[in-house]
Image (cartoon, rainbow, N blue to C red; front, side):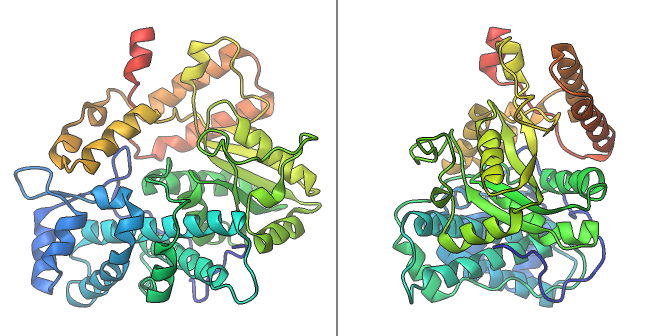
Length: 425
């Protein structure tokens, strides 16, 4: 995946997502929309599987266990796409939240399938006549079409269903399946892309390429593929690399001389495309979360190996680590560190655990959703902490101030503090 402009896309800025999600990006679907869907002929079993009831009023969650079990849920992608078409034909404009949830699930399943193929093709290169490269392109296109439809109000063809041949191919893949991506909140991704457009890409027309380390940044990358060209009114190429040292520590990324083994990060055609694109260019590297900075440093090294220059960005930053260790510092890793505190993995796992067990009511009542304060105040606290460390450059602090100003319009919930840190405080 190297080009970002899809055929037939209107040359206008995208609209905001019609609904906002919670900490994980899950939306609530009102009972009235479910009734409208039922009248339109939506299959009850599909709605029950993907959208569990979470209160006594008939409200449903936009995600269920199926969302976090993509390998087994992927065969339902065709039914999700069919339901979207059904609603658009029979009850247009009457099921905003349900449509969002359907597109969210379709995007998630096809993106997860694309990553599994990316993983497999990287470790097992394609031979002539191999069907996997074409299947990978189709899955990436479907996942991109889903977020395009989700974030724009302009007419678009609904995303295609996964073909039976691609589905059969995916069912044979044992490795590469992940139960969740760390960043799949569409409200957060839209806020992030608008910030990048307004404060990074528009002031820097020399940046024409974006590089996203997988797996956590996959949804962000595909959303960027769909929307960044609209936001900046020029082509922006989006590249993927499988690169990470927390959840992919078994992959031998480092060469004996300290370089990054490029062939360990992507299938051969994508490796060649990235190398050709970044030579003598400046590349924006965007990672979902910066904890210790290893992934951003490795991505910078890779870009420099290929003859380019990297500007690095984190969508979230683990500012809590600064409190736990006076030696912690990521000033050399993140040129543009976000002031957003990260949603701690322990909280993510707890919330997802409710859904995996079918406890939608417990998910809705989880205290993480009732965190005090505002995200903007948390970001102000992060900025004060950054000032106190004395390690950030004037340019980095200026970028933080710009983000803090931009964040006054963000409708994101505050990030709860993990219990382990509360005990340690």
